[in-house]
Amino acid sequence: MNTRIHQRKSVQTGFIHLILILGAVIMVTPFIWMFLTSVKTLGESTAIPPVLLPKTFQWSNYSKVFLNLPFFTFYWNTFITTVIKVIGQLIICSLAAYAFARISFPGRHFFFILMLSVLMVPGQVFLIPQYMIMKELGWLNSLTALIVPGLFSAFGTFLLRQFFMTLPHELEEAAKLDGCNQFRIYWQIMLPLAKSGMIALAIFTMLWSWNDLMWPLIVNSSPDKMVLSAGIAFLQGEHKTNYTIIMAGSMMAILPMIIIFFIFQRSFIQGIAFTGSKS
Amino acid sequence: MRFNSKRLSDWKWAYIMIMPLMLGLLVFYMWPVFQTFYFSFTEWGAFGKYTWTGLANYKMLFTDKELLQAIRNTSIYIILAVPIGIILSILLAVLLNQQVKGLSIYRTLYFLPVVTMPAAIAMVWKWLYNSDFGLINYVLGLLSIPGPHWLTDNRTALLSIIIVAIWCSIGSHMIIFLSGLQGISSSYYEAASIDGAGPVTKFMRITIPLLTPTIFFVLVTSLIGAFQVFDFIYMMVGDIVMESTQSIVFLYYKYGFLKNNKGYASSIAVLLFTIIMIITYIQMKIQKKWVHYE
Picture (cartoon, rainbow over the protein chains, first blue to last red):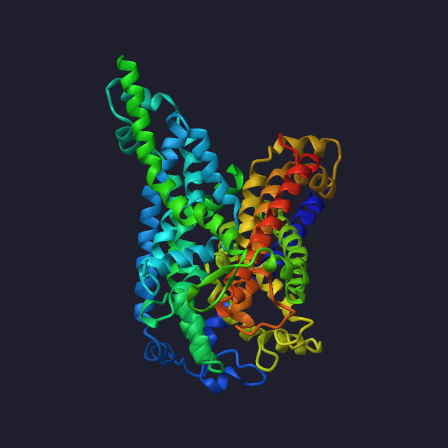
């Protein structure tokens, strides 16, 4: 009797693993294929039937990407816009989020609703006027155009407000008695405690900024102001048939995010799970 | 007196703290909404000059066959991608929640597409889909199934994009469902076991009802996301997109930035906004009927 239950249990776990492994294979195959194609010769990449493993790894495909495009510049542009957006949002959103969560001031409700209403509007509604603003300011084809609208985030503020709300009220009372002003309470007491929220926001901003395509496509067309995602689109235009080079470029574009994901896995997953449970 | 000055100081700080955000949102997000509404009544010529044309763009909206097709494509995309994505990720989350060994490895692998640049993902899938050299048709060939011309055939192009979208979204949905599942108290399952309930009954009677708030959240966010599909279409099918794959947002991009008809593009944005608002409103209304909060 007992062994029978045991047997059924192990058949069941075997079945579960089978499905999970099959799913995992489907998830990972494109990445492996991307890598393998990126080190094939052109002939190997278009062979019928497909060649799985290249005879010798053509690492030169990677240097060809750099010869064809200012890929270092793309990296730098993507990196610097992402870093500035992350830092900017962390400061601007956390300041506002603290005020909304912790201070009762006249008009709080009004301003909060106003901010939330931005969340309801699909991004495309902003795009053309944003583009016009960039044009008027003479910011087209500059990193400024990529950065500035991305500094302000209703989502980020909402997310951090949720974190600030969960902190106990006793924290600021002692500080208030000591005559601390709100900024000092925010800066010295609350901000260190909202670390996990800040990390979650940093991750979201980083991901969106690194991977965003449409806005960079719209505002920057000169190669020296391009970011990686638009660079891949550009590379595709240049090499319609040479997929080994496109795959090498793609590989290099995704690698930094994948490395960061492996290092900060826990925070990534917590961040995603948190937005799911708190909204 | 002291109390008042303290409160005033609090208020002062509050305004200072929300000011950068509110100013930024006002300039780059709120004001643009009004401008888009305004632009939707204008026609654009060269050099960004525009003239008021009243309802002309809206009249065009209602007679534009291309737009109708785009709405149809977007609807097909949503009807397939959203539910399949949600169902698959719930099933995976349930399997992962069974205390299987290697949970963190599976979680990592399923999550990988979420952190990857859509433009790059689109590129490798384009190659996988290639009807001559692609891996997919090769594997299908081994099973003696004739593979279609995935991305270049009007009948399968949209479907191909939907498959990538589902592949891409499963990881993040799954994480959200997994945390939802972990919030369900095991006492429910124990009680059901005593009553002799099998796994299927437990799943249908306990897991799904208690997961409905999470399902609702994922449904709302993924619907809004699905309405805005662009990256995969742009990268996989290209600038000159077949009518059969063109989404509403793609059409918006085309009119706004390729054809430089920003007036009409603005009216498409207004339409998109209206559709999303209506659908979100309906969802909020009917959620009372099926979402159970504990």
